[in-house]
Length: 199
Image 1: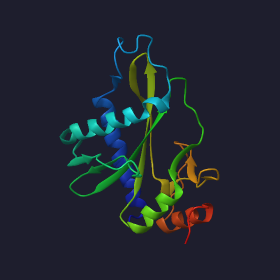
Image 2 (image 1 turned 90 degrees about the vertical axis):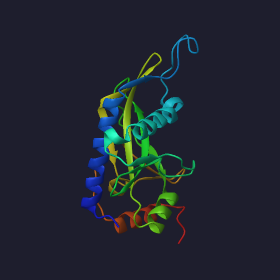
Image 3 (image 1 turned 90 degrees about the horizontal axis):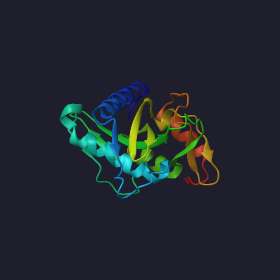
Image 4 (image 1 turned 180 degrees about the vertical axis):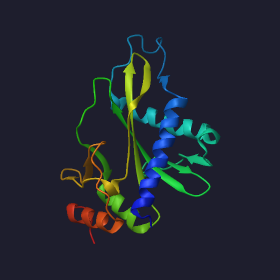
């Protein structure tokens, strides 16, 4: 079971890997002008899965450059994480988020995870620690570019706990001020705030 300093160290590691990925591939085209002659309408939800795929596949392709053993993204859609970043010493479970910074940075809360799934995973697998990596993107016609000034790496264990009562998902700002807490305290707060966790 990871202690607070271990999680903080893991977050710094994923931050470093994420910065390197942005340097390796700062931008890419979604398609060409024959397919979309009038350009791509800026809409994060429409491209977020593609951006996630670009990030994880570039991570796998550049494993040696990044000092990694492997990146596994062959996961079921129900998985809490989008990929498992593997080193000689540890596996890192990473969920990728995307935020459009084309018109400036929005400071709103986002649904980040279903409480019950998170609670069950953390309870049944003592070595499981989820890390969120939120990349900023900008739209420019058919080109998506990564915003090097916007990158937030965080642990749900360190978030201010707010559960959306409509769908029982944790909501948080990607740049929320961290509140380091133990795993036990985190699970206690999830249980306290959730309607779906049945003991």
